[in-house]
Amino acid sequence: MIANIPYIAAAALIIIGLYTIIFRKNLIKMLIGITIIESGVNLFLITLGYRKGGIAPIFTGAPAESTMMFPVPQALTLTSIVIGVAVLALMLSFIVHMYRHTKSLDVRKFGGDDQ
Image (cartoon, rainbow, N blue to C red; front, side, top):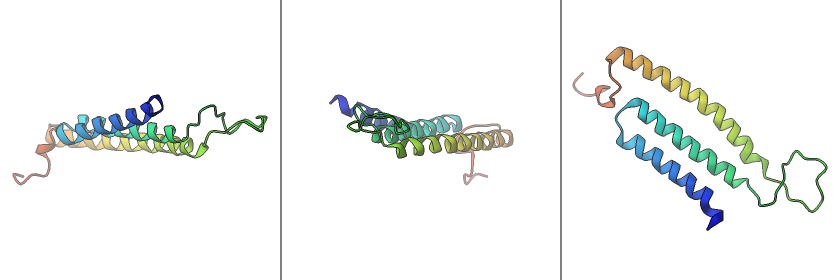
């Protein structure tokens, strides 16, 4: 059960983020939900690369019997963080532009039949 806690935490973060995106109508809250989902996916990726008792793969003087961590999920997570920051900045700029245009952050004000 203890080994499954990171997977449960990642799933909980993704579910909380999905709930926020589906049931909140404020654009900022929806953006926070997207960021929470991103954090859950990053936690999942890091958890996939973990090995109990493993050492960093960049350590060259490691004993022959030691196990190395799997470095690909760590690299994917770093890439995901950089892309996530860029996407977050872009979405925030869109939200600011939409707010200046409509003076509202409510999703129901955008693109409806009443315009």
